[in-house]
Image (cartoon, rainbow, N blue to C red):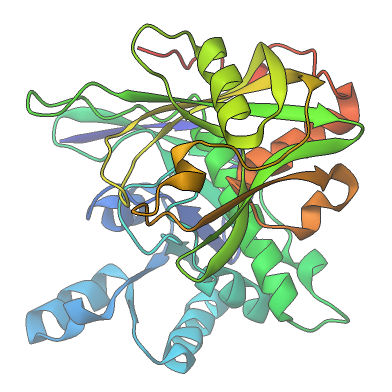
Length: 350
């Protein structure tokens, strides 16, 4: 009734009979049970503790291999250790929510990183291209295992190590999803997918960004916005960079594209594209755009700034996986980033 197709399953076979944590994106309620059935070995998985309250639920999920995620992290770590000591695979949906978001709205929780560091077990990312459904093929793609020992400090687990490991898990899962995950079909009542263009402007080893304070959070974002009717993607990126930062830039190449799901602002799902832009003139400063002038907006504060690329690892620039890929490409290719859209060839704006 269910069909699955594995990509790079040999990376999973290397851990046959060994303890490993499988980090999987969460599409629907069948993810954990289907992976337990299809992974050809004894497995356990984390599942919401509320499902164990009834006698039937407790019996059913315990026998299936479920480990309840409760308020007490002590019992969770204990049950996890017991499962891994028996050389079981532990399946974790680290987002804590359904429907994995390639944007930064659904950040991976630190529970998987804490468990991996505490038990000293590698993490293997696995993603599905779409939810499991009856009489339909679902593909599963396996990434490269993450050695958690490099995130320990003198053999100890630290807060910084937990956060860095969590970021690495999120980054690798998002990279697996790029060009692989199928965007959901639009229903008749839904609007057409939205398109957002963002500009990547690098000048004198500095990156143009917008410093945000919102919802008690401090972070940075790339300038950009929705494509207006009649505009091209390049025109949108140039306009948004100018409107939000006062900097004149010329977009010349698409770098990254991904499908995002807007769970927070409910503006509709769509595509987000990042374009490399050549700096022309101007310095970052507030403009007369509505982000700076409209007193009724509740989007927090905006401040356009230059970020030193040598120190960008220390700031919260969102989306985090775009920041990491940008730094990697910049160190190889330089400020103009003159390379094709190699990682996202299968993704097209519809």
